[in-house]
Amino acid sequence: MNQAEYSLKVGTEIHRLNSSITSLLAVRSEPSAPITPVKAAVKLPKLDLKHFDGDITEWNSFWELYEASVHQRTDFENIQKFSYLKGLLEGEALELISGFKLEGDKYLQAVNLLKETFGRKDEIKLCLVRKLFQTETPKADAESLQGCRAQFECCIRSLESEKLELSELDTILLTPNYQVV
Image (tube, rainbow, N blue to C red; front, side):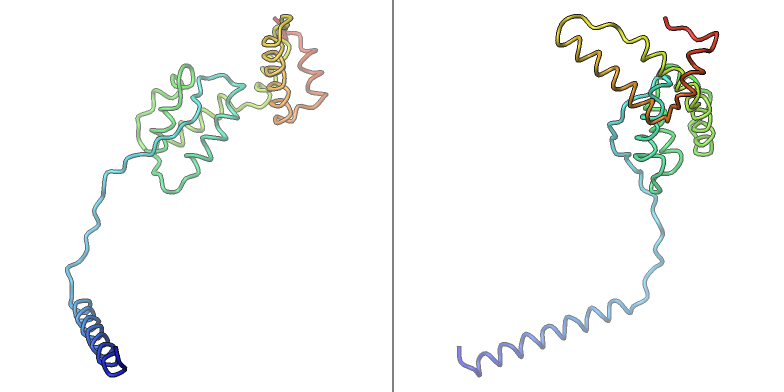
């Protein structure tokens, strides 16, 4: 292709692009009908979070995951959050909030009731100490030893995260109604 043919081809392409741009601008400047927002049904994404059954020693780990995955999300309405919450509760925890209708304004009331019931730090510490002292003596095999160690480590780490002070431990152990079963 020589220079004259090339220049003609480039000129034709520029003319075609100018025509396209002009027609697009004309379409954009025409008044259009007002846009009405359409509310689409939103399918909630599946979340694989551990269920909470009312074991007070599991509350903090449940709540931390739920809070980060659902509660703090700004793209969920409260009714969606409430639906997730109810779907993740079982046993005593579900019974506690079962009287609330699945309505957005009831969500925060349900959350507060759960926190007041299962988020009591002193009760969590007491239950963790009990759980620690109730750890079964392992049998003389590796599987039993590993299970015992895992349960022990879990209790210790949970007590550390609850910031159990030595003075609190003394109080728990010296309380007349404290029982190591």
